[in-house]
Image 1: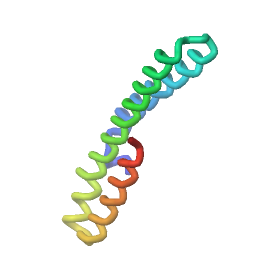
Image 2: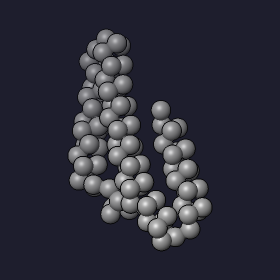
Image 3: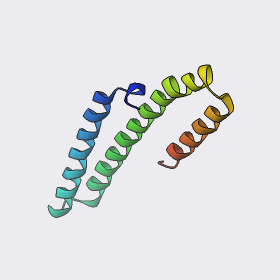
Image 4: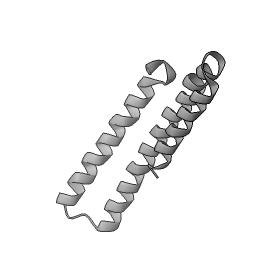
Length: 91
């Protein structure tokens, strides 16, 4: 699957998200106001959603295109539909 996405970009984004989550964890211990914690949770959630978009776009541009050009179009469309369904559950 590495060929269908920019793994370096994904890794950089995930490290940033992990840093955000660690910061949120510390905020809980430091008695930071709930509103501030919720804002940071939303920022991490948005960043993770963006990673999902990047993965889904890579899947579409590589895996789906290849499946339509060289494989079974119906199976490829069904698999892409399933991937979109999984992604849409994230929100």
